[in-house]
Structure formats: structure tokens, C-alpha cells
Length: 103
Length: 150
Image (cartoon, rainbow over all chains, first blue to last red; front, top):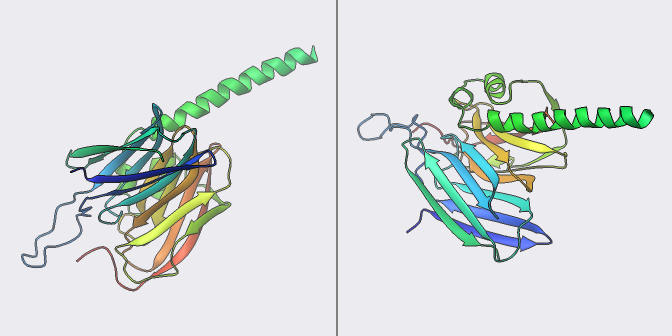
């Protein structure tokens, strides 16, 4: 299953995209409560959103974005039925992507 | 004659506009370690935008006055400014104040909504780059339980 849930809606020529990503978003500052050892940083650094063959939004994140991050943005120039693709990459080199149709 | 001058001026301005349009892309093309690991906002701004001279601007920040849980603070930033190229969200008292940065692509409206972590009570500062200039606004958020550290 994809780590990304996307909802994209067009209204009055403006597409509103909302997405939720499953990711631990560890800052690297936290310590394991049992062992006292620091938990290594593990967070998404880059989220790229494309639609209609164009990059609409690129987000650069730090560990200060909440666990299971939420992102919403808006763009003009999309229509119902178009695809929105969202892809992320984290600091460990892991990545994922997902697509949704604009409704 | 006047028309000629006008045309020349227009061309020069056009070329400058193209150059200005391309530059931020180059600056924002990658995750900036320097900006994200800067311990103060000024350093992060310099690394990110090449300047820390932000003037107060018409930027709306939607965030709670009191965040019960600093690990999840919803923040929405939007503006009526024209020609917005990038937006950044800071939590001033975090170890690394820069939480996130957004490069607007084609057709993108200057609106972004996300959830950030805040270590303690602090200002949420939004910096918007529009037309090559930096604008900022802030909102105080009281945090009752910190979201950084264990």
C-alpha cells in the first residue's frame, strides 16, 4: 500500500490538493526512553507535486514537520480528471509516490 | 524615437525578468543542509534566500493561539502578494528554526498548509519571497507540551 493519500478537488479553476503521508518524521533529537540512546533522524526532505506535466509545488522539509505529515496547497490550471502525482524522498534515501485524479 | 527607447527598455526589463525568474529555481533546487541546520533564523534565511532583510508584509498565518501538543501544530500560510516564488515557515525557538520551505511551481497559489513541531512557546514566522523581495509575518503560539525531545 502506498504511504501517500491524496485528495484533489477543482472548484472555480483552482485545484486544492490535500495529502497525508505515513512517515515517522524523527528529528534526531529524541531519545529512546528504554535505552536512553538517541533515535536517529529519519524524515522526509523533499515532496514534489506534479500535475499536467508541470511541477506545481516542491516542499523541502525538516524533522520539524509532524509525524505522518499533512500538506495542502492550491494551484490554477488543472481540471477535473487530470492526474496529480506526489512523490517524496527522505534523508535515508527512501522514497514513494502516488497519483490521484482531480475530482 | 520615443518608441524605440521604450522598446529597448522593455527588452532589457524582459531579460532581467527572465534572469530573476531563473535564479530562485537554482537556489531552491535542492534541500539546503545549511539552511535547515542553522541554529538561528537569520542564518537560515541567508542560506535559503541569500538575504535576511525581510520587511513586514501582508501574510496571513493561521495557527492556534495555544497548542496543547507541540508535536502537532497546524499552520496555514497564505498571502495576497503578487509574484510569490517561495515560502518558508519558521518556529523561532526550535533547535533548528527552519521547519519547511515551499517552492511554488507553475500556477501555484501562495497558499500552504501543514503541521509542524514546536519545542516550546514561540513565534511562528512565515517568510515569503515575492518579486525578488522578502516579506515576513509572525504569530505567537503558546505550547503547553513540547514536541521536540523525548
